Length: 137
Image 1 (cartoon, rainbow, N blue to C red):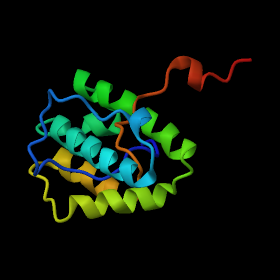
Image 2 (image 1 turned 90 degrees about the horizontal axis):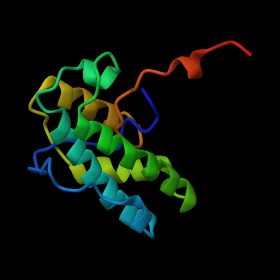
Image 3 (image 1 turned 30 degrees about the vertical axis):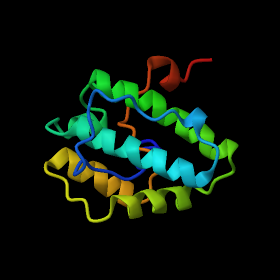
Image 4 (image 1 turned 180 degrees about the horizontal axis):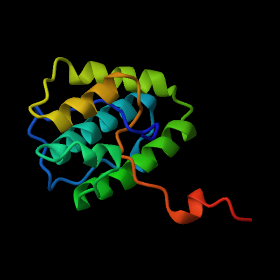
């Protein structure tokens, strides 16, 4: 799983699957990044609800919604670096914001465990392309 596979999570808040994910480029401070990342994690939790665990391990293809969130997640990684934020502090803030959220299904439980374990932004693992794994020349 990628490093971003864990900014903290769940959907106790009925985050709408149709709502637009937060735009990391519009975030100007590390504190604001924590708030936006919390919303992103909530949306990930909503997106994985009812999905097989394999969607998080890369053994099953991600849904269109997860692909959309993955793209935003990559932007969060860049923004953390641009703002010189400490990824561990960002993650701790997200985990604190999520409080005592209890997932309602196995995929949500796994995602939340990953977030609480110290990852920065949730992103299901996408299998590498042949180009990335090639040892040729």
